[in-house]
Amino acid sequence: MSQIPLTHILFVSTALFFIGMYGLFTRRNMITMLMAIELILNSVNINFVAFNKYLFPDKLNGIFFTVFVITIAAAEAAVAIAIIINLYRSHNSIDVEDAGELKF
Amino acid sequence: MSAYAIIFYLISAFILGTGILAVTTRKIFRAAIWLLFSLVGVAALYFWMDVNFIAAVQIVVYVGGIVVLIIFSIFLTQKAGELMPKPVLKRNIFSALAVLIGFALTCELIYEHGFTSIDQPFDVDVHEIGMQMLSTTQHGFVLPFEVVSILLLAAMIGCIVIAIKSKPEEK
Image (cartoon, rainbow over all chains, first blue to last red):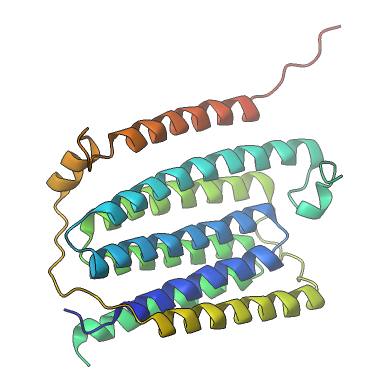
């Protein structure tokens, strides 16, 4: 069962986190930035489940945290897309560079 | 190397490869589809870790909900066939550098710590999850459950309020 050490799973989730981070840094389209955030949240979920399985197999806390994170991610995506569509209506673009009115 | 390990490495390679494609492809619709594959790969990783309930939730909520929502919003706001503009080279280089340094640092930390795992079977019973989720005793999760339900209600109302079309001004 424990042929794969926990660190390998942590390496995978770290790599996924930083892939999402790269997307967040380089993309300038709000929908693709939202996709990068989803990748980051997924890597965190992998961490929670892996820690629960390998370090505390008699408890379920990591599972519950994962469920709550997934729920909050869904709510966040819905609100973000409502904001994006509203922004598109008023600015005709969803590029972050075009939405600079709130910046200063 | 057993089949168990080989499956793990295959799933990880799948997740990371489709994840990289999702953040680098210049066609936005393809980015959404690559994201879909990456999320399915994460669900496969949960199946591999024997947490079937979380894998099912992952498929239902992410693949069935969030990705469909993202695809709808792409169709509402973008011309799906067009290429997105290339990111500026300087920003590309510096973010890649920052990400690589962060990745190296985190891997070093994980490697140095070297977690000692407990060899004990981990069985997640859905019945047990349900009992603990709604129990009010010491290890129950009923308070976060209720807080999350209020949050979902607030998010739903907030979406409607944000996305509602304002009436034209009466004169």
